[in-house]
Image (cartoon, rainbow, N blue to C red; front, top):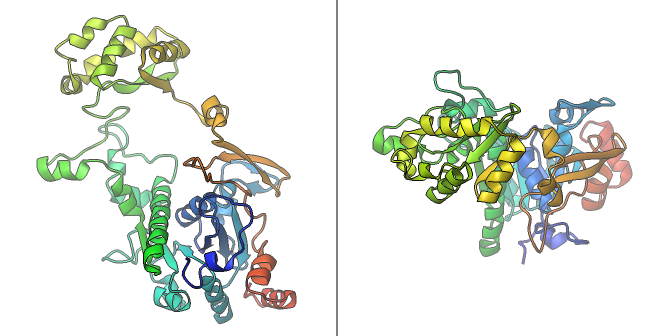
Length: 414
């Protein structure tokens, strides 16, 4: 039984959209980290209502490197499956409407600077008074507490502050960033995970809670053994270029046509298969390469041997030969190859969805992970304009008459 005030208790369910069908999410975030969390919940079937301030739409609407008819397409990635309403949280009437939505919802996702909701009189204590089961997911640069909590945070700075960026690139070179906002996406993933954990916990206690996801901490959480290695051995892991120090062979190798192929055979059994596939079975018993530790100490020599073998072969030949031998390898694809990859296409990972802004399908990433009995779905490419669903949400959900909605829109509340 859902707690009183949750959407499970108030919303009629039609065709199942995924395992979170019946869950209502209010998203008041912008750009990537918060909206990514909302997207993940929406992909799994939640009804996501995205709030944008009137006259100040989410800047993500204008992000993305491709443009068609004045439209950009980063928006379709993170706005999919979401309804768009406009609402001015700086206005008292806007805050009242927000609390009415909270009363009928399960999760709120926000990624404002810490203290912003409180400044508007919408702190968690206020939200909880309206809905004891509400879960407030808060994504920020450094978390809601601590000496740096009030600082604004961006992915590039979080990746650097967490130590992640220090490990990127080549030894002796500048620490480059990935051509993506990885820190934002990691925080969004952990935020969505926290929301799911809190939703489960609510089934036990009937109570909501705050989920506090920080960009810096999310970047730190994926850094494997860097902290214990430093704590015990004083090891400061640094950049290692195209490979991981001590893990061999696991690198990229240039093929005869100049393209790169990844070969990963650092397990003893797999390395032996690689040696056989290269017609050099004796390498598996060579003292330099006989086990994981030895190969790690002699990475340069081993990479040279494999590189010479790969340089004389076409990439397709390398990959097919190694595949037959049970050795893991693959090409370094660009997005041009990714969108036609038979494996990804067969699993629905290159998904077409209709974008009414341009009156055609747009490709995007599929829903991950795939659930066998209640898979997630992509039901829309996102709203074509801010406030597109004002009538549906405020009229159907909050029972506001059309003339009242129009009046609030004219006054800048909606």
